[in-house]
Length: 361
Length: 179
Image: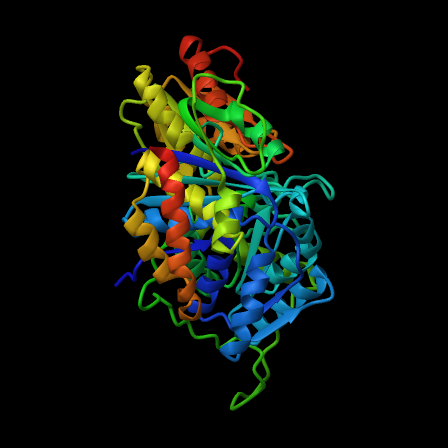
């Protein structure tokens, strides 16, 4: 049963959700705009007897996550863009060692030290593998504080299920905003046995070994094939998205997280002007909802796509791959921490309505 | 009511962010959808602070406000910055104890109120923003006085409940400016 709605900050809800999901190991290093995740953890984790460490660096924090996850515990780290870059080596090792873990990136504008305001410029880093090697992270993009709660809990289940890192990709808006959230009395925690965990030999004849090193090329290739099999299964089974208005849309907007919310307002305004606009909002950025986009592209009523991002255009590449040239794909984005205004998006919609083929990406 | 948007702005330390949160809490008490988004840029340190609050009967689109139904200002730089973003027919509420300029627009409703004087009179400067919430509530109906009071009892820890009558008094004094 859901409890009464309370007003809470996105970052705090992420931390609360992790604790509710049974995470008792948090390692991090402060950075705006996600530091409230740490604040909350610092206070609450100690009260419930878990482990909280403010590490000396992001590199250290992600390796602590590796260690806790290797021992079979639910572990998490959080940061913002520059800090997530530092964690990439560890994330690659976690992928190689097939360890379940959750990492949160409350994205700020880059590149480099950049600024502290919202951005979606880490889409490529999150979905295409920010570290070295052939690997994937499951990437989830919540669009509200309520979703931050539900999907963070789910992230721990998915991480355990697939023995991989699940990344929550938010942005400064989502982390800093307050919205009502209704917590459940009981969390849907999937208890998954971890016979592989490095918990000491116990009754076993041999000890468990957690590693990502495979010197023999055939062994390493076999390991890679295993990973790819897993990723393929996830692509077939874990795609999540929200779609609406596709049955009569003339223009389909693709946008995730914060951008999708701004677009919702604009879709209402476009309808008032007689322009039918639908939306496909990926909730999992990897696996990407290519199929529903391909299906929309094949519809006669759909004349064009418009991708909106807080970047120079990253997800738009995945949209174009899914559309496969069947319809023009347009793009509008803002950078540097700025958000597109409703008017900017509406103007773009009107422009496409008047000339679907003009100015496409 | 769909996406009714409010911007509160002033100096850091005037209770801008808290007042915005209380407006959201009051509307949430009525079962409305609400969002609160702070300015979290480096300008907060010793400088200006502002937050956007959206109140709606439907799920809220953007929590970031570009065009506001109401702007509440507690210093002159904020008024200069946010007067232009008020929707035509919208409302500008200012603390006339601190701001001595007039708005440049004539397509908005202008409510100057001596909020800081009210707060000073009640012996707690934090009541300045609260009195302006009273004006907001009365002028727009975006949340009710009763909801504000009930929300205070819910949100504040019990040891601070003794502050609530003062808050309500400030709220009521501010509401008079909306008449």
